[in-house]
Length: 89
Length: 226
Image (cartoon, rainbow over all chains, first blue to last red; front, side, top):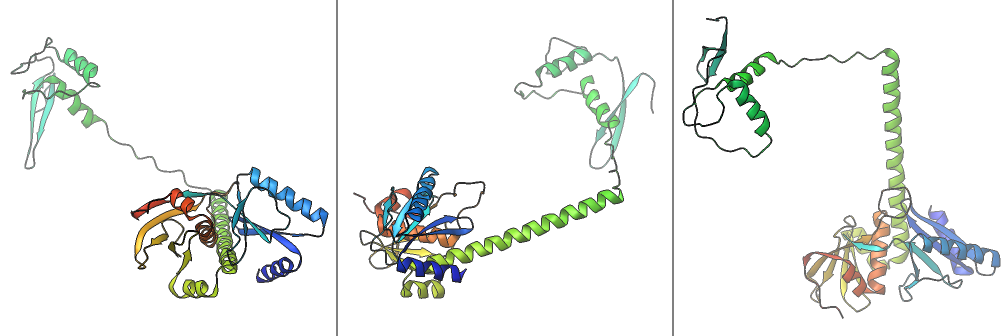
């Protein structure tokens, strides 16, 4: 697990983006290479599917200086997190 | 003494039981209780017809033959115990196997939940700075600064009512409940707690007014929102 996270971080730092989908298993990560059109299109397709499911997308950075909610896929995003909308409890 | 043509009338008290015998066809003697009928069958029918309506408190009345129906019924109806059919060896074996399967599934589910919690805490750790990580490890909570500068404390105590809006002096202004909905799919579980804390933090530092509007206030009060 740690290896996967480290690998994801390495790819992200170099030339990839990563989609993190929060779910009951913790999360599921999908990495794409910004230089590969195929991978970008696959990531875009995944992004659109998740939006249709009602998940909210956040483009985030570790420091939190670029957090923003997005509704369209951004191939240049560093990390996109999908999560269910918040509700009052 | 039992007598033919008479019904036993028993009076139960804490100290003794007295049995009187009354004629089966004895006309009803009414005192302080008026009705259009005097025959026991009529009264029973009347009771059946009116028992579904509102009960009206009646004045005291002496014994009536309708009481006898209730007493007789209680004396003749006895509950019957039906012993369960013993299981065959095959049925017992099938039951044992089903219990073992259930226990294995339960343990597997528990392992999955533990793995999910660990995974969520790792992801959360990627977004916390060193100070927040240390605070979470040491005190079970971490502080976040909102998009408008207010301070929040996210407590690692479940995901309901675990966010405190702080006053400038650090005391709690309001206790808030705001967490991610259940993810789409077949499962009924919420997100693991680490994921919920991450989303609470992201929402607060992105748009804390939206967070405050969404949250339910469990204690305290919210500031005026523009």
